[in-house]
Length: 228
Ligand code: IPE
Ligand code: MG
Image (cartoon, rainbow, N blue to C red; front, side, top):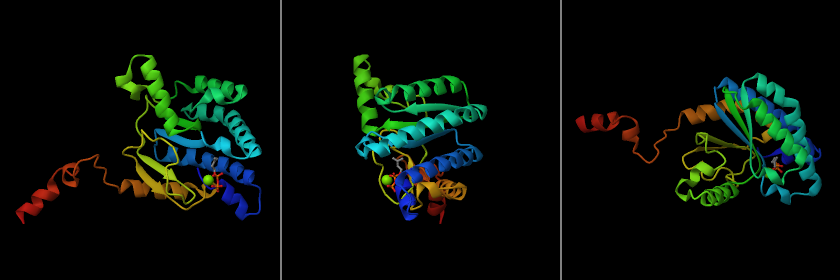
C-alpha cells in the first residue's frame, strides 16, 4: 500500500494524514474484494524495514494499526472474515500483540474470506524463520510448511500502488507465479474502480506455470495451425 506520504504532501498535509486516509482505502478494498469473491486478501501494512523511518512516524503507524483493528474487528467478524496477522509479532508492543491474538481467536472459524495483515513482515524474514523452525523440528525437507502462509494458497494477483516497480521484500517465496500489477495511483486514491481495473487486467492474463500457451489452451491453437 504505497503512496500515503506523497498523497499527503501533495495536499500540504503531514505524512501521517496520508496514512490515516490509507486506512479508508483499506475499508474500500475490503468491500471491493468481497464484491469480487476474493477468498484470501493480504495487505502489507508495515515491513521489517519500516522501523528505519522517523520514530514519530513509526509510532503513528503502530497506533493507527491498533485503533483500526480495535474499531473494525467486530465488523470483520460479522462479515465472516477470518483475521490473521503475519510477521515477526513478538517485536510489537504487548498491547498490540494482545489485540491481534484476541482478533484471531474471535474470527478463527470464519470461512468467507481470510484477511491477512502483514505487520513487521519481510519475505526474507519469513524464509529464514521457516528454515529455522523446520530444522529445529528436524523437518528441513518440508520447510514450506513452516512459512507464514503455509495453510493458504499462493497469491494469484499482486497489486502495487504508488508508481514503484518492485516487490520490496513482500511474499518472496509465495509469489513465484503471481501476476504482478503496478499502478501509479497513490494508495489513498485506490478505490473500487481501481480495484475493478486490476481484476480486469488479471482476468486477461494467460497463466502458464511453465507450460506452453498451446498446452494451457488445450492444444486447440496448435492443431488448427497444422491443419492449415
Ligand atoms: C505507505 O506509503 C507505506 C506504509 C509503510 C504504510 P508511504 O508512507 O511509503 O508513502 P510514500 O511512498 O512516502 O508516498
Ligand atoms: Mg513509499
